[in-house]
Structures are given as structure tokens and as C-alpha cells.
Length: 320
Ligand SMILES: C[S@@+](CC[C@H](N)C(=O)[O-])C[C@H]1O[C@@H](n2cnc3c(N)ncnc32)[C@H](O)[C@@H]1O
Image 1 (cartoon, rainbow, N blue to C red):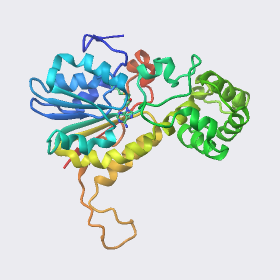
Image 2: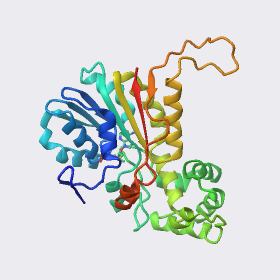
Image 3: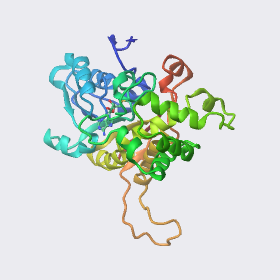
């Protein structure tokens, strides 16, 4: 896919590209963190906008992303510092660079197109592949472990909570019955059979997506402990920003978006005591200012060009 802005062939089309670069207000000499580097699409824009001497620390747990980003950002030389690490290690990674604070942080959550397109990673059910779904190959737990070993009730809870799948119980029951599940296609078929004919929901969106989509998403979130990672990184990000700098988070899942929203709102308040408490005892001081009350979403044009962008929600906060 050719990206005109960047004149490069990118395996992952960066979503809300211009909105994200603008939100971070990069400047020459600034220090930025892209905690979810991917193929480096957004990072390229941050480095470009912070020319000639802005620095970018790019983190990703996936060695493939690291390799692609290294190639894509090669022209920026030592201005791009690329490290295979979880963004959960944000504070430590910044400390190791000797940076006392940073001038902007980006988190573009979830899975990239190149991960979905790499059929052997198990994120997609277009072809038969091992049930892997790990972003980080060092993660000891894969989707196969969850699918073939979790008690039915726990599996149903994961599918319901992370997949927002109404048929979670039925699907979990079918999976447990069909064990051992061999691969992605086998799993998709079991899910399809468990949900076929059960859809009473008339919404077009629900009918458009494959019945296995939600369960696959749920398993991916559970395998990579994505919500736990997000919860751990947000306070680190807020603490690492210098005054007036921005935290920009793009999520693709309502639970993530909610977590980001709640965090920003809480950090924007001087008091977080229960509303009925007459006198403040918490001593909490606001550290962030919410920049957009409603999340920024892609325009129709972008969704048409890149359907994977359709569920993106962008929230921006500024350190005060
Ligand atoms: C949507 S992609 C980012 C795409 C990137 N903005 C671009 O323009 O190419 C999300 C990336 O986050 C990475 N990721 C997921 N969890 C992570 C974590 N805990 N720490 C670091 N990277 C993570 C994934 O491996 C994936 O490459």
C-alpha cells in the first residue's frame, strides 16, 4: 500500500495519521515516545515533524514490528531509538536513556495489519494456522493454551467481557466439547456452528462480521493481557510528560477507550473523593487536562480507504 504522505510502502496504514501528529505538536529538539511502534508509520511522522533534531523512543514487543520499523525509520539514523520492550516498561526505558521527562507519548493500541496479515501468527481465521495470537513470542501463554485448557466458565467470561459476544456461553461450551481445537480454522468453524441461526439481532454491523470475529478478538486481548498493560502504562505516561506535553491514545475496543477516558477524567480533577463526601480528604491534584471530551473518530473517507480504522477512538490529554 503506497502512502503518499510518507512516500513509502507500508504494511500497516497508520490510522488518524495527521490527527495524531497534530495532537502531539512535535517540535525540533523534542523527545517523544511511541509505545506501540508497529511498522513505524506514526513514528515517521513524529520524527519528520520534530526535525531536525527531535528524538523518538519506539517500543514494541513484536520482533517483526521492530524489524519493519528499523527499515522504515532508517533515514532518521540515531534520532530513532528502537527497543523491543513492552510499553509497561515505559518509566524504566526512559530512565535508561537518561531522559527526565518527554514531550509527547503515543499509544496506538491493539493489533496491526501486518500481524493480522501474517497468517502463521493465528490472529486471523482466513487460513488454518496455529492458535498463537501472541504479540510477544516470549509470552509463555498462547491462544491454544486458553482454548484447550481453560475451564468452560473462565473461557465464557473472557469471550463475553473482551469480545462483547452475546453467545459467549454457548461458544465456550462448544469449544470445550470440541477439544482439542487444532488450529484457527477449526476454532472458527466450532464458533460458527455454535452461533449459526442464533442471531436475533438485526443490526447490520453484527450481521456483516464473521461470527468468530468477537471471540478471536477476546482471545487476543486475554493472551496479551492488553487491558492490564494499558492500566499499568497510563499512570507512567502521565508521570513522564513534561508540562504542556501531550498523551495521545488510540483504542479500538470500548473497554480500552473507557479505561483511557476514566483515567484522563480522574487525572483532570483536583479532588477524587466520593461525590457525597462534604470535605475533601483525598489530597488529589489534577495532573492532566482533557483536550477532547468526545473521542476523535476517522472520517468516512478514511474508513472507506482503510476499513480497519472504523472502530478507532482517539483521546488526547495534556500535562498541566
Ligand atoms: C496498531 S499497531 C501500531 C501501528 C503503528 N502506530 C504504525 O503506525 O505502524 C500496535 C502495535 O502495538 C504492539 N504492542 C501491543 N502490545 C504492546 C505492549 N504491551 N508493548 C509494546 N508494544 C505493544 C503490537 O505488537 C503492534 O505492533
